[in-house]
Amino acid sequence: MRLALMAVPLAFFAVFFGYPVAAIVARGLREDGRWDLGGAAEVLGDPVTGQVLAFTVGQAAASTALTLALALPGAYVFARLDFPGKQLLRAVVTVPFVLPTVVAGSAFLALLGRGGVLENAWGIRLDTSVWAILLAHVFFNYAVVVRTVGGLWSQLDPGQEEAARMLGASRFTAWRRVTLPALTPAVAAAALMVFLFTFTSFGVVQILGGARYTTLEVEIYRQTAQFLNLPTAAVLTCLQFAAVLALLAVHARTVRRRESALRLVDAARTARRPRGAGQWALLGSQLAVIAVLLVAPLAVLVERSFATSDGYALTFYRALAQVPDSSSTFAVPALHAVGNSLAYAAVATAIAVVVGALAAAALTRRAGRLVRGFDALLMLPLGTSAVTVGFGFLIALDEPPLDLRSAWLLVPLAQALVGVPFVVRTMLPVLRAVDDRLREAAAVLGASPLRAWREVDLPLVRRALAVAAGFAFAVSLGEFGATVFLARADAPTLPVAVERFLGRAGELNYGQAMALSTILMLVCAASLLALERVRTDRFGEF
Image (cartoon, one colour):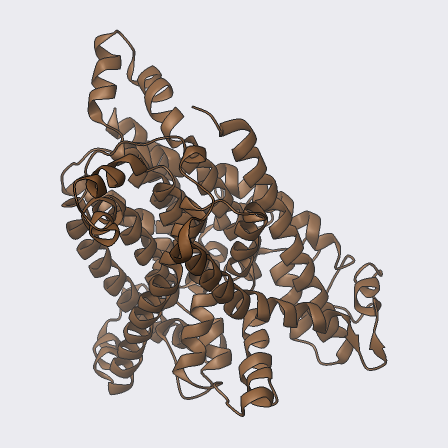
């Protein structure tokens, strides 16, 4: 049964991840049909490579710690507290996650850089500093922690913690000994995803770090796109793989020791109105964090989408609907990117949910090294250079029976690769928390494995499934690294269209980039809000 569940995810990753990445690495390390590894030792022994690796790991660890510190209280607020505008706010905090990094980097420059809000108000500049990079990473990954940890936290039975308090434990002691151990798998999953995203950080470091700071991802891009040095890029890609695999091995070893069956309840019954000064203060502090770190950069983008040399107007929005001229980089009006993005994201979400759900079901029970290796494989796309994946698709999928270069499906396939890990990591802690005795009871009563999963697991994990679908959709909407190589000129996505406008000089191009970014934010917020309502309306009762 387990092998049958693993078959589809294994085939998907083998064809659309392993094969393209192996093709691009082989192109860089093979010359005249022979492997040429002489330059690998030179690249790995270069002190610059060591410095880049050290900074990459250091900033990723610091970004992960800072994100957890600021977002875990937010996970509690969204999981346990009920307040007006909660669904809308949950959608808003996810919007930064789908923004192209070049856009968000520009917004943070307006806040933290020369002449920015921070300098004008307090005379402080943080651009080209590590703090700018860390804060931008919190901006992007706050929603990862809130939605991943909050998804499980909202389903934990609060009665267990209340029982500990009745036995004399303080509120903090009851949380530390009862709730925190139950949340450990979800916290570890969120930390892993944040670390992988920041470990492969590209746009944020390139824009906010300046020439002083660089990551492996930035260096791979430079060696590939600027210097056309595929051998060095291939070596750095392998180094990135090795680091990610080591991290995944440590994660698998530490988390599995802490997994246990939990009592899950309807999430709608666990959220209550804030009670006491402490909960109101916590809610207020999280609203302040969201306002300063998440909403302020978004507000800058909106303001710039209306700001023209003659004052505020809809000039840039009107220009998006105009038919492009012969000098434009677009074959269709830029506004068509909205429909393209929604269509691609819908297909990518469907693929990611099917593949990810099958993979999560296969990983539900503890198993040997084969299954642990399968678990690590699912996370590799998050730790792989998007440049490598994009080029790999173009190089590998160009011959029958996999000649997909002109197929529209190529874009959602690439987007689904990034969505699958979120589906797996969101659903897996909940699936593993289901008591095996429930499945055994269903089997004793004559239920087949499929029916047992439908009758026992599905009612408990459908909330997590909705959260996973929302994540996959948001990730697909904002995916840029691989899509920029694959999207056709007559079918650009919103992030690709934004990048094209930012790559051209002039106030009109910059304004249209900000207008498209604002539209992307609104589309994402509306889509996520709709998913929240569907989840509440259809899955509110078990």
